[in-house]
Structures are given as structure tokens and as C-alpha cells.
Length: 243
Image (cartoon, rainbow, N blue to C red):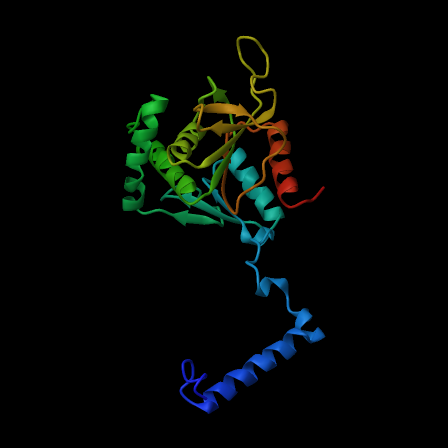
């Protein structure tokens, strides 16, 4: 007993620990112990079920609605950020209040240092459209856009505001460019995906088709072409292994 006194206060405690150890050894050697799922001992992988994904949308005609349509097809959740008088018939509408809209102004002002456009625009409805863009970016892990890349650094139109705010906040940004240059008649982006490179501060060619993140912003031009639609479809197919 003297040798046990350093670790145990009584013989009963020693016996109890010995019995527990023996029971554990017997369990480890039992075939039944192998029936436990490996997830008991290792961290479970993130779910790839479509229902675990969310599309953060602006609900605009064209690209936004097509991202929403494909999300519906794959059982991906959609949240449409909106404001009074906007997207009133969209079933996924989330109305932002005045404070929420105003809170986005600092992000729009920062984006405008790169875009060199005009904000506030002088039109309340247009300002609200830009303000709601921030919430698509804020709640997403990455932005997937269909649009026209300008000088390899920014994106044309209203889509450009969301893209730049995403860049400013270090979010991954993918852009499918398939627009023709009016001067040359050539397709500027050669109908390819591009990804923003934070080291070179420019868009670079992205080989293949990107995969959706669990929280993504599916956005883009209102003038969506058939090639743009196909590009969106391919993103869903690749993400959920449908080919």
C-alpha cells in the first residue's frame, strides 16, 4: 500500500481505477469497438449538401435572377437584400432598414476611391441599390459575378461596386467576362473566368470553373447572355458534382 499512497488515498480508489482500465482494454480488443464512425475521433468534413449553401443576392433582373433560379433548382437557399419599393414580388426578399442602408456608406465611399464614380448619386433609389450591395458582400465568403472587366482591375456597371467592396474586404472574387469590345468587335474576356489576385492587384485568368463557397454572392450584369447563363450553370454542376 505504501507504493500506492502517492497516487491514491485508499485501496478502494486503486481497485476502481484498475477495473476501469481493464474494462477499457477489453473494449478496445472487442470487434464491436470498430463499428464506431471515424467522425467520433476526427473532425467532420464540411457538408457539401446544396441545402447547406446560401446565395446572397440583390434580386436584380439578369444575372442575379439566374443565380437565384439555379439556386432553386439545386435546393440552395437564397437571401435577396432589398429595401422599400424594391423586388417586392421576390419570395426571398429581406428588407433592410434605413440604418442598415446608411451603415454601408463607408464601404461605398472606400470603393469609390478606386472606381472614381459618384456616390451619393443624387438619386435615393439608386443609392439604395448600391447600399444593399454591401450586404451581399458582407454576408458572403466569395463573390461570383458575370460582367465586364475594365483594365484588368475593376468591373463595369453596378456589379463593379459589389466587386470592389469584396476586394476591399479581402473576399475571393471570380468574374466571368464575355463581353465584346465596341471598338474592335472582339470578346474582351474570351468568355473565361477570372479571379482577383490580391498580390498583383488585378484580375488574372482562372483555369477551369470555380466552385461555390457555402456563403456566396451570385451577381452580375442585367444583360445576361446565353454564354453567361451556361457559365453559371457550370459553377453549380462543378460544385455539386453533377457531371
